[in-house]
Image (cartoon, rainbow, N blue to C red; front, side, top):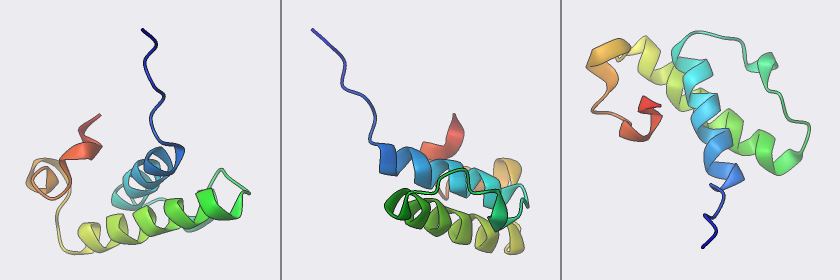
Length: 69
């Protein structure tokens, strides 16, 4: 039985979140597709907010457990 691929939009959100938490610029978005870019930016915004609130490293694990990869 084949495994289904993970949702592209969810992956874009998670990658954007990781970029935001680490302090990378929003110009680093790898996608030019409008829909994927929207999800990436949404994750980036939440990640930046969490970085500003001090939820980086171990203190941020409880916030978004899907990002632990």
